[in-house]
Image (cartoon, rainbow, N blue to C red):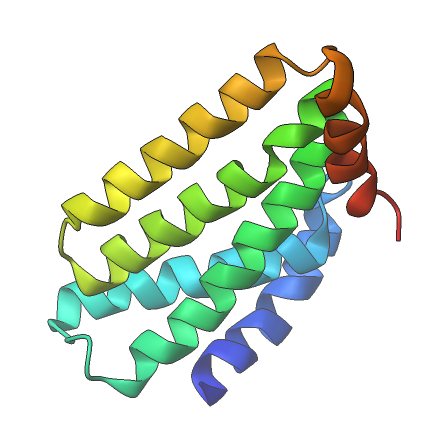
Length: 145
């Protein structure tokens, strides 16, 4: 983990310098993502397995990127599309898990697909009677707390 943390510290000033060309770039996001990408490439090249400690470290950093991407996306989504934050987050966590374990988990894919289906159904009836308040409550639950 210490190597990945050192990578973040080293990549952070590079991210700040890159902001001159890409003003919307978050230096912390750049450094964190860069560290786990470099770590992941190293893992693939070196042939590490899931039992290695570095996998846990990569998972922590990748999870941070997942949450960060969800918050970034939610800042760009319309109010009504905020409903999809949970399925988006679960999808990316499932993808990270399958990438790190290097195995396809069919039951996870079915579960994530079912979650998306449920939220699309909720979205399609969002303006109907009793559900209107419940869906608004779901959206408001995680908004700017």
